[in-house]
Amino acid sequence: MTKPLYETVAELDQRYVLPVYRRQPVLFVRGEGAQLYDEQGNAYLDFLAGIAVCGVGHCHPHLVQRICEQARTLMHTSNFFLTEPQARLAQRLCELSGMEKAFFCNSGAEACEIGVKIARKFANVVKKTPDYEILCLEGSFHGRTMGALSATMQAKYQEPFKPLLPGFRALPRNDLDALRNAFSERTAAILLEPIQGEGGIHPIRDEYLQEARRLCDRYNALLIVDEVQAGFGRTGKWFAYQHAGVLPDVVAVAKGLGGGFPIGACLMRGVATEVLQAGEHGTTYGGNPLACSAALAVIEIIEQENLLENAAQVGAYLQARLCELRETGAPIREVRGRGLMVGVELTQPIARAVFQKALEQRLVLNAVGDTVLRLVPPLIITERDVDEAVAVLTKVFQEV
Ligand SMILES: Cc1ncc(COP(=O)(O)O)c(C=O)c1O
Image (cartoon, rainbow, N blue to C red; front, side, top):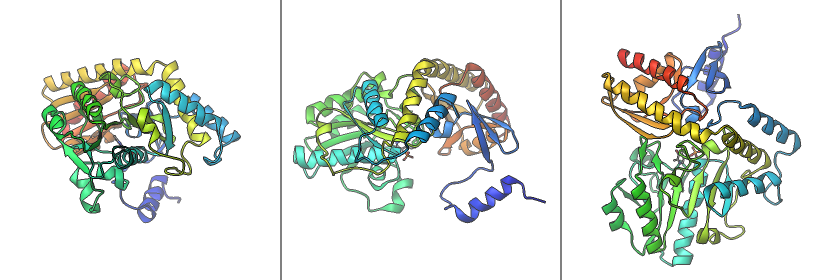
C-alpha cells in the first residue's frame, strides 16, 4: 500500500529540511482566493496570507497569467542589461510611494539591509560622522541578515548571533520625549515599522512618525520606513506612512509586493538616491523580469479590484467584530491595528494554543509571541469571511 502523501512529505521534511521552522501538521497543496486546501481536499479560511504576502489571494488568475506569459518570454537576464518590467515597476512604485528611485532585491530583510547600508554610508561620507547612530524601536523586526538583525530590537533574535553591527540604538515605541532626546547631529537615520508586525502588531502613532520626520529634517538624518509587512494596501493605503501624511527618505517593501512571488524593493528619494554609486550594491536576481511582472500584476489587481478600500472597510468590520467578541467575555485584552493588519492581545498566554485549535477548525492565523494573535488575511476577503473567522474564534475561545 502506498503511504499517504502527508506522511511522505512530513518524513522527507523531517529528514532533509533544516528544522528552523516549527511546522504545523498540515500539508497545503492548493490555494484559491482566501482558501487553502490540504491534500485531502479540506478547505481552510486563510487569515494569514503566507504572513501578509498573498494580498490578492491565492492564485489570482491575472497574477498567474502574467507570471506564465513572462515565464514563456524571458525570466532572467542579470542586471547588466535593461529589462522592461523592471523599469515599468520602478516607475509605478515611485508614483505610488512618492519616492524617486527603486532598488530591487528578493526579500524584506534585503530591502532593510540596503536601507542600513545607505544610512551608514550617508553618515560616513555625507555627514562625516563616523560615530553615528541609527535609531530603532524596541520590539522591531527588520529581518535575519546581519544588518537587518542588528536593527531588530528583540533579544530572542539577536542573542545567538552576537556580536552584532555597532551603531544601533533602541528607543521605546511611541515615546515622543525619548525620541526627541535621542536625536542629535550623530543621528544617521531612524528605521521603524509604521505598525510593528512580528513585535505584536503595535501601531506607531501618526504624531510619532510626524515628529520623527521633523527631527530627521532638523538633524539631517534619514527617515527609513519598513513597509515590508504593512505596505501594499494592507492598512487601506498603499503604504502605512501615508496615513500620517509624512514622506520618508527610504522605504523598504517586500511581502505583498509580489503576491507570493519573491521580490523586495528599497525605494528612496532626495539625498538617499545619491549615496550608493555603481558597483557599491547589487544582487543577481533582484528585479528580474519574472518577479517584476508578478509585482506589476499585483498592482493592477489592487487598483482594478479597489482592494485599498476593501482592506479599510473589511478591516474596520473585522476589528469591530473582534471587539464585540471581547464584550461577550472572550479572553481578549485589546484589538489593535489598521485595515487588515490586526492584532488581538489576549488576557492569558494562550495565543499558540488558540492558533493550533483554530487550525484544527480550518482557520489559518498565527501567534506573535505568547499573547498576541495576528490576522493578516488577503485584501480580497469579504465581511462573510470575517463572520466565518469570528465564529471559529468564538468556538476556539470556549475550548482553550
Ligand atoms: C516589518 C518586516 N521587515 C522585514 C521583514 C523580513 O522580511 P523577509 O522575511 O522577507 O526577509 C519582515 C518579515 O516578517 C517584516 O515583517
